[in-house]
Amino acid sequence: MSEIENDGGNEAAGRGGALVQFLARALVYLALLAIPLTLIGHYRYLPFDDCMRHAAKAVSGRDWTDVLVLRPDVTLDQHPGWHALLGAIHRALDADSTFLVVVSYAALFLLVVYAPMPAFRRPEAWAASLLLACLAAPMSFLFRLTRGRPYLFSEACLLVLLFLWNAFSGSLGLCAVTAGLVALTVWIHGSWYLWALPVAAFFLAGSRRKGFRFAAAVAAGIAAGALAAGHPAAYLWQQLQHAMLAFGNGVSASVLVGEFGPSSGWAGYLALAGLVLVFHRLLTGAWVRPGVEPAAPALAGLGWLAGLVVFRFWGEWGLAAALFWIALQIEDILAALAPEPGSGRRFAMAAGLACALMLTGVGDHDARWSGGRAVRPRAPGAPSAPIPGEGDSAELMPGPGGILYNSEMSVFNSLFFRNPMAQWKYAYGFESGIMTPENLAVLRDIQSRRGDWNAYRPWVERLRAVDRIAVVSAAKPDIPELEWRELEPRLWIGRKP
Image 1 (cartoon, one colour):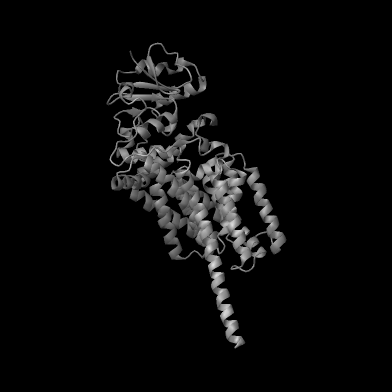
Image 2 (spheres, rainbow, N blue to C red; image 1 turned 45 degrees about the horizontal axis):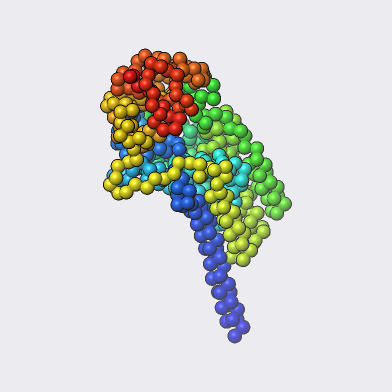
């Protein structure tokens, strides 16, 4: 009788333990899901970034050559797969650019934070790793994860590959999966040359056999992705050329986009990561988990070092590897603190970490969410939101076939987002390096002279009746040859009288 009772008790305990493990995992998933849902539902947050021009590009269905005044040698779409996906959503749901931006940043955020979850027996370790980054850099870390830009797709694929290459040997099946994921990133995100960083990490870590297999898989994926994009040789070359042009041929980092500037070093995050290793040593007797593929910490170190020159290497590659590797160490710490995976203590720790991550993520630190643009719902079938001024704005903006000469990238993002079907072109779009040489020379002169209205004179002199100049200024621009109207606060549009 006692044996039957004991068996029943063990069975009940087993069911209870399985329930605790399920609830602990569910709490982490729900906490991460709550972050984008809160940004959308409570703050009505709309990021102001490249995600706006990606959405507008998908709605317009036009080539960049029909939207921007481009150099003749860099004309291919850098993100053909991403625009194809957004375009499919636009056509299927009659979605406007606002809807596409919201879907982009919510879906890509979840894709990144969910990607490595299957790697952990205790997914709250991943939540703890994300929490450390949120606490160390509350603005920049979540800023990068909510941009709605396709580099986040590459980051998610990198996390999946770090998990797979850590858990399995470099079999042919794993190489095939690697090639497939890399091909998707090349088609969706582009920037194929960045895969050289994780390849180098394998060799730097001494995993030569895996390194050769990983490199072969990456090379096959790059080739497949370029074929999917069309014009494979030109696509690969223009991606590389675009990267070289983006750095401005030696101009000051102050005029480049933020991700091309140097990283601050993230000293706060490094200090927290060091504390994790100390706790790991105290609780397990070893500084790090044994048997972990060393390519992950090698990539983290390599990305951090390269990030001191260009932040992108750290923000998109090194940090992702660091988050994954630190999460593995935290998992050991949590297992030492609560050895029974189905215990109440384990559930309490999981609930606490999930709750802390959610509250940190949705907190409006320095108005990071409420200070953004607000989502403006659109009725089904209604046109996209017009430029402020509606009737007046039509004559303020360039005519069909005209050019808008602008010295701020934000002007392009905003106006193209709200007017994706407008039949004019922008002199300055999403990257200064792909401008025509004559327009780039004017832009660099404007940036170097800082407030000298004479720097705009080359554009003023070539202005046609259908062209306009857009200037961000607190006061009316002192260019008397043109007639100026304030389209919206601080945004002035100039035209010939």
